[in-house]
Image (cartoon, rainbow, N blue to C red; front, side, top):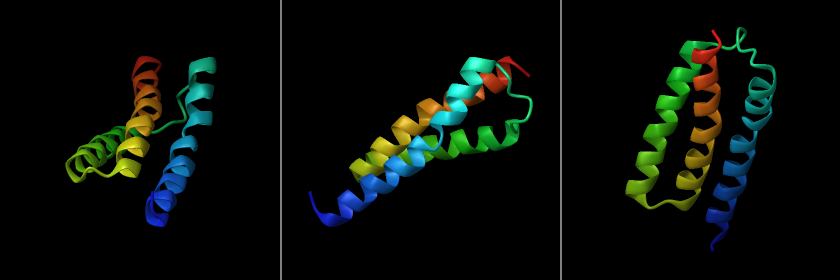
Length: 84
């Protein structure tokens, strides 16, 4: 694995993990009133597009980061819709 790939994986870990506290809080409290539905809808759409891009480019950091981030952001989006 080259240095650029390692850099991408570290960056992916940082940005992906940043969604975890919000996802945990939303799951525990079922409180999502302060979260923007528009923001999470656009974000989740963008993540899906980045994931597709990463798959076509066969770029491991992009695929891993966006695959995992999709789980976290998608969970938050679903909870936002469910607990409006």
